[in-house]
Image (cartoon, rainbow, N blue to C red):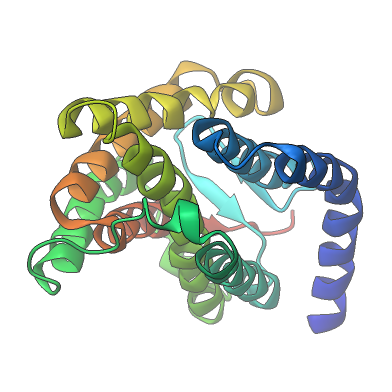
Length: 246
C-alpha cells in the first residue's frame, strides 16, 4: 500500500511541478502591495493542485455528485497532512496575508458544532439521494481515517484561501454579507473548468459548489474559518466513497 502510494504521489508531483514553478515565480515577482492579485495567484495554484488529480484518477465525480477517492488511505492521509502544512507555511511565511484570516469568532465551541451541522445538512441529503451505502464497500472502515484527514485537511487549505484570505480581503472593501456572496461565487466559478472540461458533468457541480460556497461563506462570516472548514469537510466526507477497482 505504501509503495503504491509513493508511486501515485510521485506521478502527481511530476505532473504538478511545471505549473507550480510558474505560479511560484508569478507570486514571488508580484509587488507586495498587490494584495488582491497575490491572493488570486494562491487560489489559482490551489485550483491547479486540485484539478490535476482528476486525470490521474486520484479522485472522480459521477452524475449523482458522489465523490470517489483513491482507496489508498496512506495517500489520502499524506495529502491531507500536506495541506495542513501548507496552511502553516502561509501563516508563517505570509504574515501580511494571514492577518486577513479570521480563524474564530464568537463561541469557539459553537462554531465547529454549527459547522458540522451545516455540513450534514449539505451532505446527508445527497447521501440519501445517491442511495448507496458506502459502509458496505470492502475496506471502507480502514479507508475512512485517511479520508477524514483529507476531507478536513485539504478543505482547511481551501477554506483558508477562499474564506480566509479572499473573503477577509473582500470584507475590507464591501459589507460582510456581500463579501461572503462574492467568495461563494468565486468558489463556484473556479470549479467551472472541472465541471465543464475535466469531468464534463456540467451544471450540477456548479450548483452544488455554489450552495456549498454560500453555506461556508455564511458560517465563516458568523463563526470564522475553523467553523467553515468543519462545514466543508463534513459535507465532502459524507458524500465520499473509496474508488474500487473493477
